[in-house]
Length: 186
Image 1 (cartoon, one colour):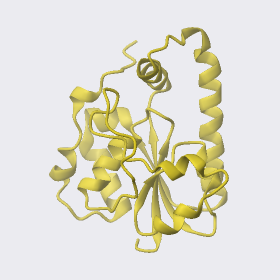
Image 2 (image 1 turned 135 degrees about the vertical axis):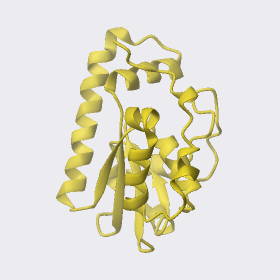
Image 3 (image 1 turned 30 degrees about the vertical axis):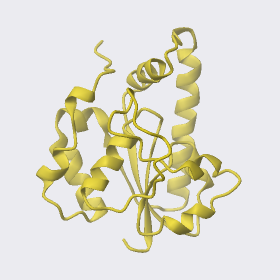
Image 4 (image 1 turned 60 degrees about the horizontal axis):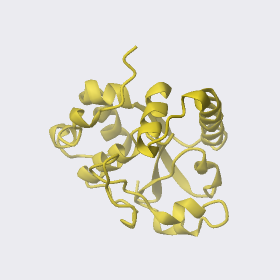
C-alpha cells in the first residue's frame, strides 16, 4: 500500500467526503490542503486538495499522493497518470439523492434540468469505470445508502481493501446518520 495512491471517487454529493473521514479515522494519510472549509452542506469538511481541480492540465501533485488517499471526483480520474499505482474506492449513491443534494447545496431548483444532469452524471460514471478497468486498477464500490443504514458491511469492505487495522467501531463512529438529509424516499 505504501507505493499506491488510494483514490476516493464518485459523483459530487455521493459521500466522497464521508469516505475521506473514514479513511482519516483509519489512520490513512490524507492529501488535502484545507482550503475548502466545512459548511452547512458538509459539516465535517470536504477533505479536498485544490490542485485536483487543475488535474486536466497538471497532475504533478500525484507525486505527493503516493502512500496517501486523495479525493478525485468523477470524471476527473481519467486525468490521473496511468503509470502510477492506484486503488479506487468508488462511492455510489442513488442518483435522485445526488441530484436533490446538489440542488440543495447550490440553493437552486433544477427540476427542469434533472434529466440533463442525470445523463451527464451517468456518462461520467461510465467514463471513470472504463478508465479504471482498462488500466486494471483494483477498486471497490461503496454504497452510500447502505453505508448510512448498515455501516458495518461497507466499512469492513473498506478496511480489508485499504489494509486498515483499527477497530471497526472506531470507523463506524464516523458515520452520522443525522447528516443523511437528502433521501429519495419515493
